Image 1: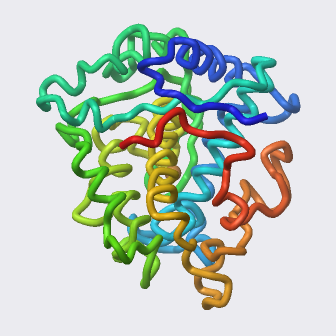
Image 2 (image 1 turned 135 degrees about the horizontal axis):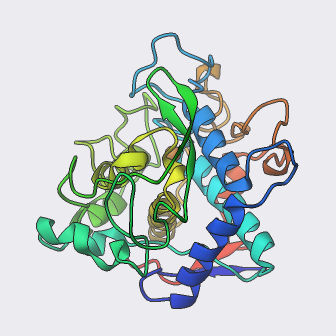
Length: 320
Ligand SMILES: [Cu+2]
């Protein structure tokens, strides 16, 4: 079933289903001794972020170090896989195989004067609600949405029982603009490169620009910083805004692929082992290697398998 991923601001049906679906996942238990299914994704993201590649835990981790899901080439396919799995689980709990994850085109809001950006429609009662620690309005207000685990300093995931936290427009007063998105998609033309040495936050290719390290924070990273609160931690999927941001990031990658005729994913297979988990044919790192939380474990999924998603989903528009 090929689903269509639509703009959350122009498609009420996807908006309603997304809000309803993530709440169902918060009360969905695949096994009685597991966390709820929504939170399993939070664990997974945190653990991937704390797994510094290739060696694993780093005694002195820095924000710029390459990990299993960020600061390296696998950033885009790893999150593409995460979105596909979340979409699958939303389809399951809603019994709706046609459901497509919506995206939030934050560059539209990025065109507004900065003081108006935290007041854009996405943060209204009908969409995600607004700022607060805890958030008190909208569908994810304190009484309707609980945060159960947070990543704290030192790479530990710590249990909490509180509402969602957001600080819109505080750590960054603005979102990325359309010109910045276009500059990323056109980067290097006509010799575009998916990624480049040294395959980390210092790379000059498209992945590092879209992730947001070049003259950063920008693009993906800037959205996390603008939203703030829970979106600033390794447990950032706690905020349902996480998936709407990443769906737009994935759409921008798809737009880049289409515009340039599917340039090769880099690095290829014949590169040093220190790039483990980031090469074309490497397994993306699952939540754990012992298959804990088994329904999120789909065996070996590699970047090469995720380059063409047309059998699974398409975006309503790739116009950026
Ligand atoms: Cu992430």
